[in-house]
Length: 471
Image: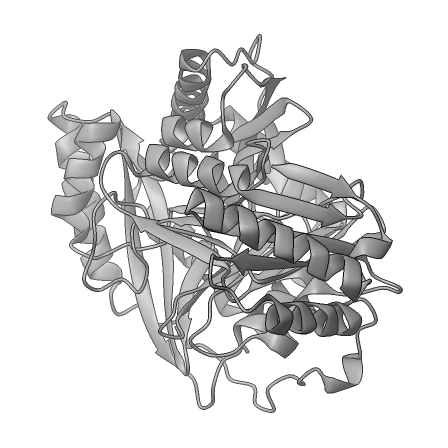
């Protein structure tokens, strides 16, 4: 990616037009598209969620991800370029697409600010192949036309402009400059308000018997020696009395789960997949790779003593620790296969969320030369925490047992930049929103010794996390 680090160029129409003329000339000479990305610091505080809510239009893609406890948020709307892939090589094809796009991008402006510069947003479904019931292709990538971010007290607005050999650059330049004027001094009085209804989701347990049967089937497969672990998912359908806003759901998610990643990605049919994921698939910043094993779940206590007692029981459970160690060992082996050495295994610890607590083992290592974050994603997805072990056998068992399309649930959402760095989360504690209809997903890891009633209760706890954000 070619970079031009300068402030005034982005706001000076004459200089901007000169740049666009030169880029259009290069597009004509090379016979390929180019992208000009302009990043400018906001003049005052901006909230990427409020901005994306104000500019999003139904039928247009959007992406949002925020980690409130880190003060990091990034959002994008519409698409400058996009691509969709399917099949077993989809992660490699996605990596190659990202590299090609960034090779033909000229980035301009205040690029030394955190999260400045163009990003490509990514969404990968659980399965490699197309599912006719899913609004999302197995892999969706897009560089947004409009992008806003907040990180370390810096607020940045970016416009990513597609320049083709026949582009009307005068029109596009005017649009970009007008957008930057709006974004860098944002008017919150025009942002929509919350829905004016509240509704409660019934504690519908009518499908518990069906799920119990699926858990029993998983236990029989494990007992026969086909798998050591199978993650069995379920879903529940709801209909609200009014339209549900994914943006208001995100606003509640970041308030109630500040240590999770509130995320949303939209398909072109208006469907949004929204969640508050506790699990990092991969984060690469400054040449350092971070990931984690999260497996083993228990409820929160009513007071500190009860909470601590439950956590102690969780860490002392043979069944829960066997499940967790299998996940952690597999992640470590997959990192080593990429030349990424996380060193000795760290001690498991407790991750406390507002409604549940998990066993967590973090990993951190220096990135190997030439390894892209999407290479790491290809190696790690699906994790044993969302699929099972061994992976291929567990995927086959899931297809036989669940008989439901997971779609984006337990897939991957996130972003990457021109260095091959970025952040990807496992799409958990999540659901699909389309107008007034909601489908919530949750799963539980089944191993030898799993108790059917406890696994049912675990899925209820996980579903309640998102259900409580909807109204």
